[in-house]
Length: 116
Image (cartoon, rainbow, N blue to C red):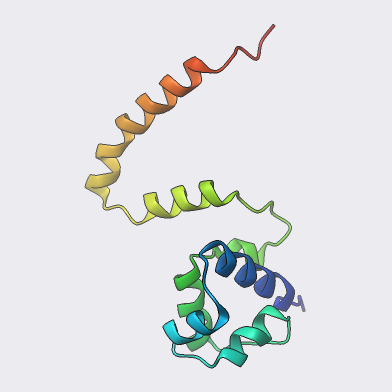
């Protein structure tokens, strides 16, 4: 059976740091003991779902980082953008599509040509 404690601990530590939160702050927000967060980050934790679910949600960790650690980790900016889009309603997403397409088109037009 696969050991998920390392990918989980690493993902929690990185996401917590990126959000500028301490272990104590994370523990308080998910109503867990600080030692629980410390154990998870030190690859010693095997959290129950009642701890794992709010932890993953709070830190906005993609479950693929834990269960498919062989996949390359997204950059913080891409991850933030993806989570913003995923939190949109269908109407908001439909409205954003032409805006994003226009911005990307303008940005890419400014890039130097990659074909020589």
